[in-house]
Every structure is written in C-alpha cells, then in structure tokens.
Image (cartoon, rainbow, N blue to C red):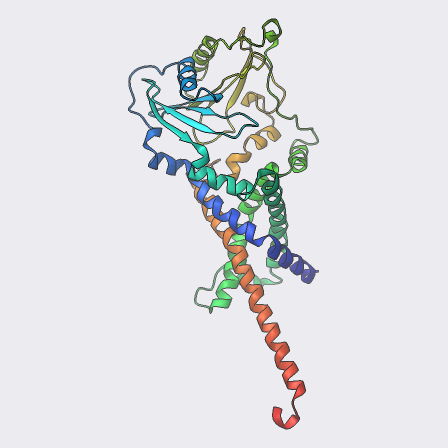
Length: 390
C-alpha cells in the first residue's frame, strides 16, 4: 500500500510540481503586499489634520471628471493618515484604476493604472498563471487539488514505522551529505509545513471550484446550502426613469450615519450604484488589513431604508460559523487572519512549499540514476566472460 501511495505521490508531483513551485513563490511575494506598498508608495499617506474628511459625493464627482469614460465603483476611507481611494472598474470591462486623494483637501495624489502594478501582475500570475482567466484559472485550481493530494500522500509516506524512525522524522541532519540533507529538507520541512499547506490548498480551492466551495460550506454548516452573492436592489427604483441619476447627497447621509455607528472603524467602503436599481452597498471594518469582521450594509438609494440580505455578506453578528469561514477565506490564504505572526508563518510555509517540488524531484532523479546505473552494471557483467569479470 505504501509503495502504491509512493507512486501516486511521485507522479502527481511530477505533474503539478512546477505549478506548485510557482504558486509558492508568488504566494511569498504577496504575503507582505500591504506592508511593502505602505513603505514604497508615499501617496498612500497624508499629513493628518484636525478636521473632518470630505464627503463621498465630493470624491465621486471629482474622480468622475478625471476618468469620465469609466465607472467609479467605490470609495475607501482609511483611518489615521491614509489617503482616500476611489476604485474604477466594472465587471465585463477591461480596466482597473485607483485614484488616491487627500481626504482633507481633496487634492489628487496619484492616478494608478493597476494593469501595470507589480503586485497586481503577481496576483494575476498566482490566480491565472499569466494566462487568460478561462484557461489559467482551471489549471491553477487543478494543480491546487493535486497539491492537496500530495500533502496527504506525503504525510502517509512520512509517517514513521517505529520509535527509532520517529527520531529521524523531526530534525534535519545538517552535517550529512547533500543527498541525505536534501531528503531531510523534503521530508522534515514538508511535515512542518503540512497544516499551513492544507490551509492554503483548501482556501485556494474555495476560489478554484464552485463545487468545492459549496461542499466546503455544506460540511462546515452541518448540511446547509450556500446562498450565492447577489446585488441588493432598491425597491423604490420602479417609480424613476432609467435616465435619472443617483442622488449623491444620499451617500453623504449614509457616510455620516456609519461614522456615528462605527466610531472605532479603521476602514469604510462605499459602493456607488451604477444605475437607479442598485442599492448602496457600504461596509465598516474594524481592521485595515483583514476583511472577515466587516459589517456589510445595504440601503435603498432613494429613501435610505436598510435592505436585509440573505447571503453571507451582511452584518458580522448575523453570520454563522460557516459564513465566517467563507468571509475569512482570503485572510486565511494570505496569513493575515492573525496579524504579523501569521503572515510570517505564511511566508515561510510558502517558501517551503515552493521548495518541495525541487527537493522531491532531486530525490526521484537520484534514485532513477542509481537504478539505471545498477541496471547497466548488471547487463555489462552478464555479457562478460567469467575470466573478464574476475
């Protein structure tokens, strides 16, 4: 049985190893994206002032004059000395821009085309392998599924047979020759990265396959069905013509209400409706660097009545355990859920995962060369006269 599992582990590793290595490397790069951006992009910060931020309507109107042919999707306010950010993108259209403003004065600090952003390019590689999404995403998801099987089969192969073998499974013999050292690096480091690797694989598969996401939710909820995300609709829109524009002073009223309800929030997101039918979606988040604890609220854009939604992106207090796991998926995947300690853990685990296909390939290649050498020696010996052999 162990021999069969070893063959499965080998062939899956040879099949998906290159992609797993690539996902591990790009995962390392993305782990500290927020920290690196804050250090290297000065337009993300402003000099704090003892005055209130300008309202959402101001930034929506000003941003729309800068990029008049594109849709302003949402505005993000961050606490402290951070810039206000207006995001421009629309589903089905090929553009994504971020406009950074001074939240006190309204001055434009930076217009950024995200198609040229380093981390955005790395993210596209991590999700789509630098291919069109329809091609790259299924390949990356399939490799992630194979990686999950590799982790499980690897644990079976690692499992010690007896007490004597157990001592060798938890430590690396640094003084050993390269082949033995490489073997230890693959087995020992692979074991220590196992749990984090399982977390990476499961959270990646939640995005990769709809069937996996639904199954994962069904298991974690005790048999309940996942309600898919949908845009909330303003009930009062039927009385208006499709040419009517959103009354942006409503956005300001919601913004002021949210500030009173969430005085300690570190991040606010306000989504601009694209037509008279959509509701105004907003969120208040106690953390700048994670997403799962945010309260998502939805309002009729005409009368500001709150609209209750049935999917998991409602109020945090209404979310079930299964809902919270889904909300937490991104934060778990990048290691942000526990702050800097879990990010460091995720970084080193990603580095180890990237190394496993390399060390595993060398183990296989060394054994293959040894087997070939023995076979050639045996053939040569059997063909020689006895006197020549002696």
